[in-house]
Amino acid sequence: MNINMKETIDRELGCIVLSEEMKSRIREKAAPRRRDGAMKWAAVFVAVLILGGTGAVAGYHMLITHSVNGEVLLELDPMRVVEIHIPEGQPAAFPSAEQPTAPAPAEYPVAPEPAEYPVAPAPAEQPDSAWQGEQPGVPDEYGMIQKDYKDYRKIQEELEIHLLDTELSENNPYMQGHIMTDGSDFAMITVENYILGDTGRYQFLEEENRYAYESGNVFLSPISLTVRLILSEEQLNRGWDWEYLGMYRFAESYTSGQGYRVNLVERTLENGDAGDAVLEKSAVFAADGVEYTLRGRVSMETMKGIVETMK
Image 1 (spheres, rainbow, N blue to C red):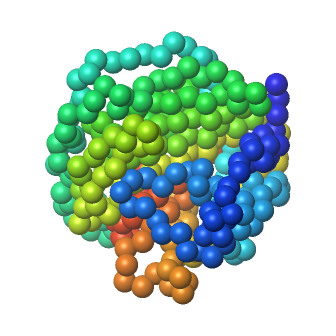
Image 2: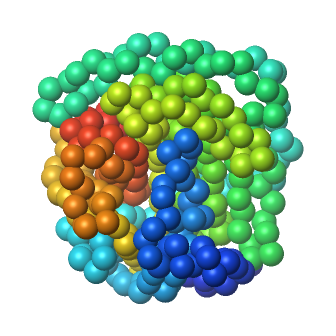
Image 3: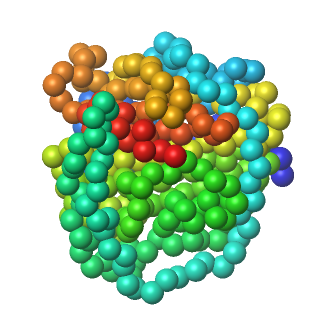
């Protein structure tokens, strides 16, 4: 069934029910952020919905725009229609219980000069339940195909497309990848714990389907990745506008060494300032018609350095 992206997301959001207490906490911007694990994507989307309606997914235009609290950001490199192999609900593939080792020590470049950072310690043995392997990609009632993966490279193999990647993500046993697509117009890939940095002591929380972790000295959180792909001319003409709402500010636009036009967005404190705290940063850029967002609690220089490694 061919359902456009806006209708699909609006209908799914309409099924979300929040308690009055949660609504009040979001409106007052008083809900503390949990740092023992990755913040739920759904929680962010719900916050946007309550604070600003469905503006994050509405307003399709010929020009794809991004904004922060009404401030339109500088235009990125253009998105274009790309071709992918649509995941078909293949049987789940379960590996052995043996876990891969953590990344060997490597240099994490920091603009303008590279600096050597410690990397995550060797992972503790994980229970079999920690494996969130490939799950059958069966369309739901709205025609959406959703599928989980343990490896970002496996996603690329199944979609038969080359996407930007970094050596900083290699040999990572804690990735939690996911793809959502309507099979005709758009696809969105999310990868939690994409880059570990010097975070450590990862522990899988089975009931929440996520990992808890300890912050490092440089990486106060792992880096997550979001990849957005447009699959049809119709969707390209509609666009894919989105907006950061609430405690965020536009920080900077610049051109990376690879020639990507990058917008940097930073989370703020209650007074709208970032202060001296290392708060969440988002780097948004497009390459070869595909849009990427890197997000995590690192310094601005470290985030820029990570962008330089995306090839």
